[in-house]
Length: 336
Image (tube, rainbow, N blue to C red; front, side, top):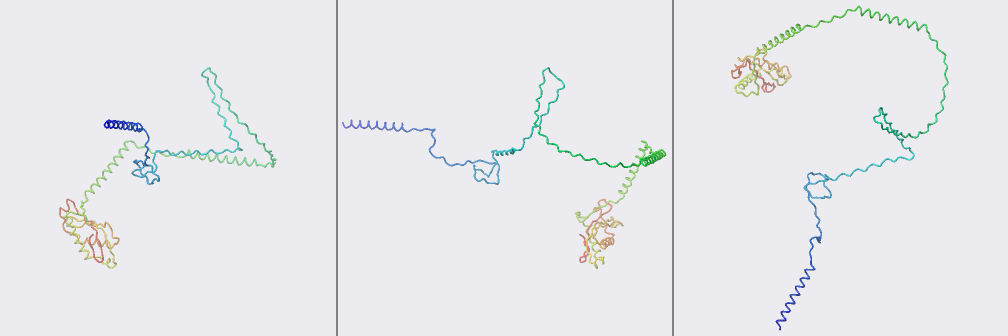
């Protein structure tokens, strides 16, 4: 009896639990389309900008890698139209201009009647102002002046006769004038002969210039920038000789007046070491005649110099040495 009561109690408990679960399941439902109950968080979009501006926006709408103020696609507001000027009531409105009448038709193409042009509306004529009374001036009577008719006729006759005489004299001088002789135009043969003569003269002049250039000696120029050993050695030996002679024969006038300066000489030397008469040229003067003349004299005193080797001349007729010489009262003559 006690076991049967336990079984009934268990069954009732199971039924009660099932009923309770059914009630809970039926009352609790889920809807996927229901709005969320949690409040949305404050978010800020992030975008990329292609242009950067120096002005920094006060209130940014987006986060980006650089500042950008403006440059969007929002159109600028159109300016408001200006109000039309008010026309005062007392001022009359401008009258409309009459329309131009259509041109007249010259020829009628079809039998249909041509519509008449509308007649323009003529504006109302304004009342004309009253004319002011005109005061007529009284005529002033002047006595007629006496004109010397005889004198005027005499003067006119005399002037006419003088004009006729001058015209006759000019025509007579023109008839007696000898016509100027027009030089005859040269013929084609004469023009050809003149051209041949001019060509011969030019050829002779060119031949003379060629002979003069061919007779000039060929020169090899060396200076302080020369790097060839043989040419540099010859030029150095020549400089030492000129410096030695220059210090021995320093111009006394330059020492007395304490004159210093530098000049550039261009010296031509033959293969045997001699210097031609016109072989010394002052390329750049020192500004003092006493120094220029002393430099030329010192180079003349040193001639003849040593023979020029063939490997220095290299097939030329002369050797030209270009050097700068400096005169100093305390140090003497030196090459630069």
